[in-house]
Image 1: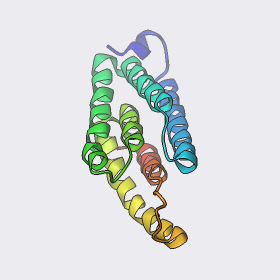
Image 2 (image 1 turned 180 degrees about the vertical axis):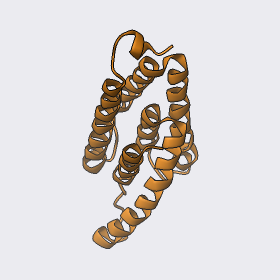
Image 3 (image 1 turned 90 degrees about the vertical axis):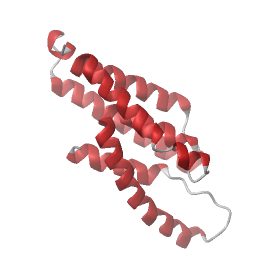
Image 4 (image 1 turned 30 degrees about the vertical axis):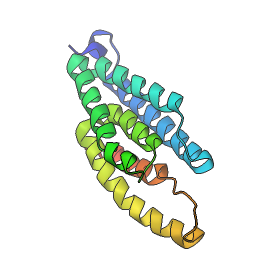
Amino acid sequence: MNWAASLDIPSSTVGMGRLIALGVLVGGACIWDLRFRQIPNFLTASIAVSGLVLATVDGGWSGGGWALAGLLAGGGLFVLPVVLEYVGAGDLKMMAAAGTLLGPLGIFQSVLLGSVFGGVWALAWLMAKGKGKSTLPYAPPLALGLIVVFSIGP
């Protein structure tokens, strides 16, 4: 059941909601990660809930399932890197929340693209900061991957 249609909500309105949610997520995550080296739970949790609601309104239970699969894929792809301490748990939470907006295929593409951007980001960071103990905020390259995939579609 397409609840957006039954509630007379245009699909473009739901799409705009997804765009706004993604903008808030990547903007907030980048700012917090660059300044404090962490991504707050209230940001990722509220976007994850918003993504689940938007997908369910737009596509009914199958839309909600698509968003839930994206959440699990986004988080699941980052479990091992978090355990190995390559990235922080905030990156996992950000990608899980983004998965509710992009779905499993979109989040997979975003992770691949964000990893490429991350390699360039790490080289630039090393050249600028040197090999000291400075931690690399990884939200910006992941966010760029999310934005590109959202813009061109999975």
